[in-house]
Amino acid sequence: MTTTSRRPDIAELTEIRVREPQRIADGWNARKRRELVGADGRLLIVAADHPARGALGVRDDRQAMASRSNLLERLAVALSRPGVDGVLGTPDILDDLLLMGELEDKVAIGSMNRGGLQGSVFEFDDRFTAYTPAEIAARGLDGGKMLTRICLGDARTVATLEATARAIGELAAHGVMAMVEPFLSVREDDRVRNLLDPDSTIKSIHIAAGLGATSRHTWLKLPVVDDLERVMDATTLPTLLLGGDPSGRPDETFARWGRALDLPAVRGLVVGRALLFPPDGDVAAAVDAAARLVHGEVR
Image 1: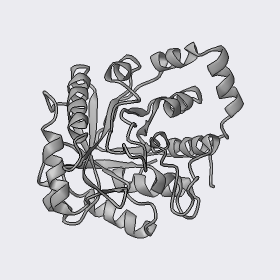
Image 2: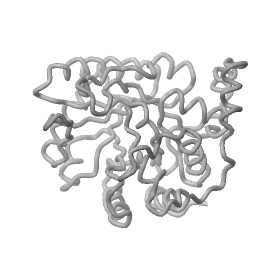
Image 3: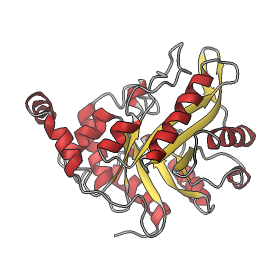
Image 4: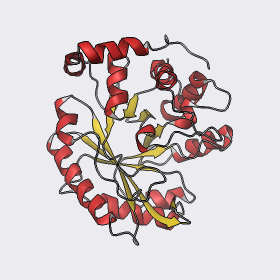
């Protein structure tokens, strides 16, 4: 793996947690913050919240994200590259990155609902088990992200919708971005499948956009699907596109991202495994290519 940052000292991070846990709260209070978006109104966010749902696999390696030291090293490389605006993660990962000094002048988005564990019988129960709106505001994070899977055949969906709506309102009251990631989803052969056709995506957009008592700080996180121009005509909410399946060919993936970024509502990318675990192992090169798509040439 191409790297420009030192390998994280896991023993050091653990020692701080044992002897000086207050350094985490103090670090968040002292962190140098930035505006959510810069002059071009775009964002490139690296996503690292998959492990908290038990989703550790990348392509044919089912344990690719199991090593925390390896994941943190890859995240440090990504965050060191020009054009990368920030990171999306759960409290454990963001606190580690904070202690490593990697979140200065970066956007930090807290992942909120990780209860629907991958492969579980309760996977559609996307309850809120990580960041709360109050903690996001207290620590000066820049937003909260909510996975909102909508299964018309599963009664637990209504609880997810209610919790998401409440979180959107609470984040807005603090003046903080609410990043909602909706899918129309089904369970087939004991596996959850997100419906990625245009019409299903459009329906999920309309349901998600109507959640909460206000939409003034709501952003969407959506997949890159076919007929995206028609899909994006379904909303005026600013939208970040998710990275999608990292098993595809990188050149085809980057080409789809580039075409999608031409749409006015699309304001950037939130990408995890496709950038952190590229097929050739060169994290810096993958991140740089994504940054050029989002921001143009960056220095």
